[in-house]
Length: 208
Ligand code: HEC
Image (cartoon, rainbow, N blue to C red):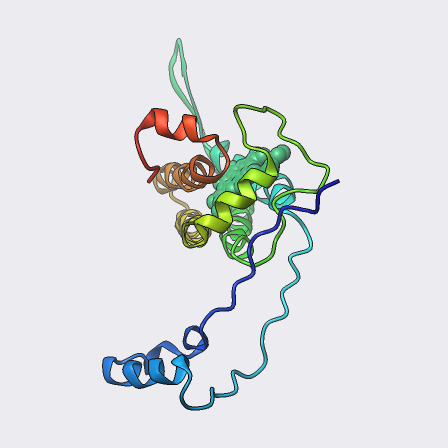
C-alpha cells in the first residue's frame, strides 16, 4: 500500500510571517538581506500547530459539498402552467442556516491551505478512472502548482464570504449570484487539480 498522497510541506522565508506593515520598499530591501543570510533572524514567536488530520476528500464530503448543496438548493425556480413558482428562503431560520453554511464554506477555504493535508486515504481510488485523477496524481499536481492550490483555497474563502454577505442581507438575488461565484470557485480548482489533463485541455488551454 502506498503512503498517503500529501500536500507538500514548504519552509517559507521568514519574511512571510512578518507583519505586512514592515514591507515598505526601503525596509523590504534590508529585510531581504537579513533573510538571505546576514543578520540573525528575529524570533518568529509561537507558530500555529495545525493538524491536517483529515483528507481533502473527507473535507469535500463532510463539510464543503453538503454546505454548497444547501446554498445551491436554497432557491428553486420552477415554471408551472400557472406561471413561475419561486421557492426561496423565507424565515429567519432559513437565512441563519444559510449563514452557517457560508461559514463552513469560507473557513474550508482556509482549511484547504493548511500544509501537509493528504488528498485522500491511502487505499482510496478514483471512482471514475479516466474522468477523475487518482489521489497520487492529484498530489503531484498540487506539489507542482502549490501557489495555484493556495489561490484556489483563497477563492473558496472569498466565494464563501459573498454567500455570507448575501445571507446576512437576506437577498435572494445576491444569494443566486453568490451561488454562481461559488460554483466557479469549486470548478476552477477541480479542473486544475482533479480532472485529467485531456479534460482541461479540451476546453481550452489553462483553466482560469
Ligand atoms: C482547492 C481546491 C478545491 C476546491 C476549492 C474545491 N475542491 Fe472539491 N475536490 C478537490 C480535490 C483535489 C478533489 C479530489 C479528492 C479525491 O476525492 O481524491 C475534490 C473532490 C471533490 C468531491 C468528491 C469527493 C469524493 O467523494 O471523492 C466533491 C463532491 C467535491 N470535491 C465538491 C466540491 C465543491 C462543491 C466545492 C466548492 C464549494 C469544491 N469541491 C471545492 C479540490 C477542491
